[in-house]
Length: 312
Image 1 (cartoon, helix red, strand yellow):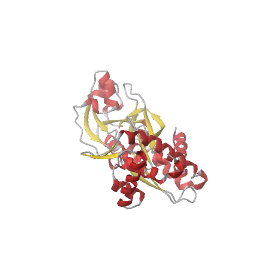
Image 2: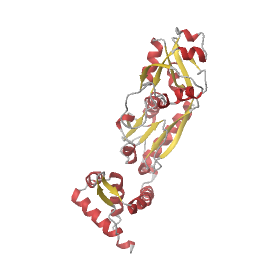
Image 3: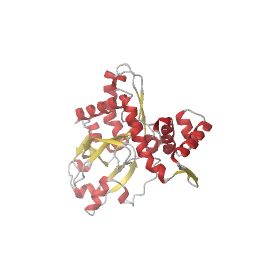
Image 4: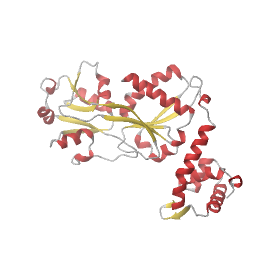
């Protein structure tokens, strides 16, 4: 095959088709008509002598050949995008770009709070659209529809770029009038009642079964290892709610320390180290290979790194 005779736009078509798994969605993504995309798929099939996408009960399913081609084509297009978009194209002082960031309540109340202040000084016209984890999927991030995901992830798709923002320990938050404020150890901790905060990921969340201890996350997993279990009275997905409840009720919130320290100057709140070992957690940012070489995205990642370093 003579590469000079190949329409290289077809590689863009194939890249989007394999990500979308739909002729209609791929056409919308590229702002072309569905017949044009269908014609592009026909030409791709002729070019590679393979059906590439086959209609099954699960929708359009890629063939073995298509799966082999996908990482190669994505790598080629990513490098090409990088070569034609120099970093100097982005000026944060004048840019009016909107960055969409999927973020947990934990990251929003700690890292993002500081980031907003930094943007006001260095990039006053930039807008942040902060999206909750239940509003998006990994697919949205992979497509570049969401610029970045900031959360604590158990695992991420191999196609994502990722970086640890920081590691955080845990702290226990309670009212100054709580009985444990003056008599605090593992025994009294376990006799007390507690607030649980979700380690949210992607997708729509479901209710919690208090009996499924193995699914409750870091704090309860470590208690299980030493044969203990705490009495959880409130389940919430919001750190600010947990802090406010702990402040006003005789309940203990065991939270990542950076979130707990939001109330460090509040005289009605007491912070204590957990009376058992909990390994530090990693807050990460993850993004699509489609945006890895984008000049504005590179600037944002650097700024987040600087903000996180200052907060340490």
